[in-house]
Image (cartoon, rainbow, N blue to C red; front, side, top):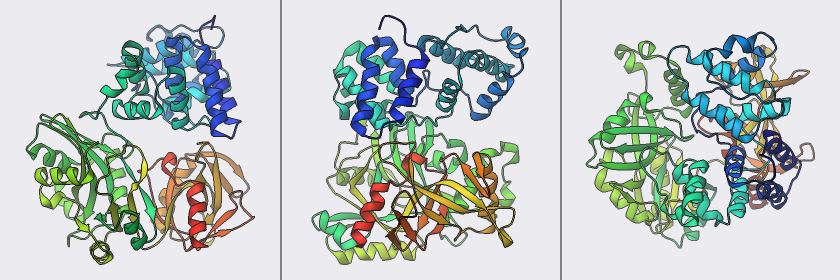
Length: 541
């Protein structure tokens, strides 16, 4: 390309990709852009379109983006901040990718007294020459909600084409590096061989392996050859624990650090006989009688603690009113410098049992017949948990994937769906958003959701209050009594059957749908897809 790539080029490609429906066509559109770019611009374009910034952490949230945009309506704002802001070039047309990158680097360097004001100045100077679509693109990129019509997987496939890399090797390297930008930098220096050098390392969170949903214990066991590990399916918060020496980090399912919220987990990790380790597990809440508390109560406590300053956290005297948080683990990804993800599950479990006290292990046993699997299932339910996970004994740990090697079986069928809108309630629900519009994720286009119906069943008064306050902050428009929201909130829905229905664009509706719980630990990209809904319908008919 004779001229440097500009942000407008990236936004135009994102818009074109959004307008197409097929995975291959989306990949081709991205490839057309990448083929025109020099290596430096290609690295930046690929990273931005994958939903990442360079550098990775800029300390810019949604409120800062909104404040910067509002401030631009006042003509005297830019001179006011110019004296305290790290100089950033302000082109008269759409900025080049290099200029956007320079602004990102300036944001990363901000610190000390007046940091918030300095960040606002940089954001305003960056946003000033942009059109509405460019501002929207960068705003979504800053807050991690970029949905440009192609899933991250499609972007990575197009990047692999542009750099002549093997797609699965690139995906694996990005997963373990935690950054596409870092991977591409190493590839530019060392070639494709650099991909094989990436591995899990303490301190860099890895997207967790996920379980597929199954409805029949017998059929699932038969699929694994009649022999599998049967493990309790807990109703907790997914955590990943990293230790290197005395340093411990605890990450949530969404790869956010939550170490300060669970000192019990940090203390346990430091007590293990290792120098370094990465553990995968759950944090469960137990009441005074040792029974698990409902997931919603556990997440509510997490939300309160995350927003409270240390001085405002619950005093020790009130600890008896709160659930006791207990970390329990079911897998290991790294141990004293040795990568474990490629080891068979059986071997990983034996290593885990040697390192972690039994009280902090998820109960598990070998099931070689249906009776053994059923016994684990019944024991999990009797203890107040969700069901059972059957795991293929020779399976590796497929980070970031929902593979067939792990299957979860619960008493009732549930789906994790995205809230698209909500309706103002009547009667005792007057003044609250109630009837939820539910959507299943499109497997190719992350901006598209297929509606499956509505429900207000299962919502308690407390859930109504919390949900109304939350959804109003996500409002995009109103249509009579319907409040449309950004599709970012996930809710677990129990139902009896998937039925054909011409009423909704999905072609399906859920019979007797009811809210089981909110899933603030899940992002919209982790919701169930319309293909999974079709599969459930096919099995039921």
